[in-house]
Image (cartoon, rainbow, N blue to C red; front, top):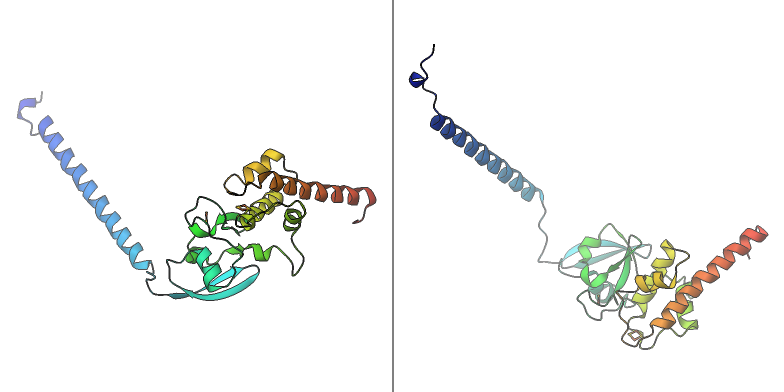
Length: 217
Ligand code: FES
Ligand code: FES
């Protein structure tokens, strides 16, 4: 029979050994993480603070512009490209006056760095109309008198037109939800709801007419 008291194995020794192994594993993992982070940082290309040339795809056209990396999309559109339809009111993401579409989704241009919009499809209020022909939502805003000072209007139109793209048959609550981030200090909300619902109704009646007659009205 083995005399346990004479073996070199002990509980204390086991715990010490396990502790050393665990500590070694932690140090090796930390070193591996540090190596990976260093390599990732070496691969990143630092930009700025000097201006750099970028290409932005706006309203179906490519625009070359030289901007500092800190420039927002709103500043770049207005100050560098002369697209002043996009309004800047709060400049801090709380009013949605600066709403544009990025890849067909409403986004706040004052909260987006222009360099982050490189390679994306940007649509501004200028891109909604076709020459002198207004977009249906713009025309409905005029018809329903859905504006007063007009500072919120481009952002409102972008939000309402985006809603009709994703939901052709919105309810009043859907419209309210779609513009819930758009602030209108002049209080034109009822007219904005009316205009947007009217566009949806007109589109739907035109679509039913096509279905009934088999051709476009
Ligand atoms: S100007 Fe961008 S959210 Fe107000
Ligand atoms: S029309 Fe003046 S803020 Fe909306």
